[in-house]
Image 1 (cartoon, rainbow, N blue to C red):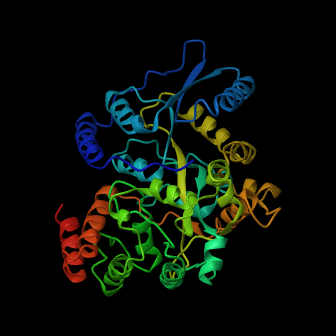
Image 2: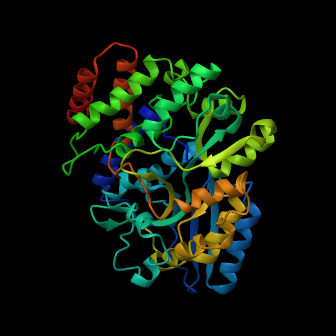
Length: 427
């Protein structure tokens, strides 16, 4: 279950338009889910593309909650990934927002600064906060204020084709410095590539995360570009060298992460950065490749930083049932329910207690159990590496466009970094 990238220009335009409406309307009109005269309350709950795979799971979970809370009815609405951004922005603006919404910190933060979500500090006890991994709770804050409750997580591990690496005479890399050496050795010894990572602006943010892992601050405290530094230029140079030395497929400029998966399953690349939850797909699509696949930790830089993707729950500020909505969100994300969903969806929980379950301990030296164990073991140091801020996808586009220009020889590294910083600061 991979967190999907946003559509580049459509999102910027829509967010800008909706932001202006939110300001003009003071944050929206009251919700339509006010308590009934007899004291009954309805909670409207939106998720992102969890049907039909988890229909039975959530229907059962909701039925249990309604049994425990006989005055509450939960109406579950599942929204396609591609539609959620426009639907929630429209609903918040029109005053018809649901009471609990499944988003992620990147997108939710764009509206948190406009007070679209119920502030959680002071409404959630310290004991309740202690349920969640501290670094993951921090990812749901903006300017020191909590706006979301952590839910499920995914973090990349590095799958490696042991047969290809053995043929090249190399061990799986764990750092970008090692990756550069492995890439050369694999190409020289096998004629194949070690790695595929996309530079398509609207696709995966893995390359942008690599800046942070290699010690580069993307923005400063004022939100201005902080990557126009020797460290930032070194990252530009790193990826440019790999491409110009033909150690990355030319397709990295035009194809997204899906192409990395295709090439790995075809035995054409030795390494694949992906979530542990994807391993069963490889077993189904390419059993021969799965049979020689081992799992290692996420490739990182000298900082040892590990990235995690977070899904959360937010409560629109205009809800008329804030206490009921918050209670339901805490129920969905408690230890027991996070553990059961992690098992059902093959993801990771953000609840610290659930993460200690034996389910996340390795029971084998290969396969999905090993991948899950390594993925879970990274959680204590994992963090959301891209800071929550307005325009994060625009920053990715600026960086990737200028990276492509250096890789194609259209700009020097110095020119590209300076141009990228000027474009971000002048937007």
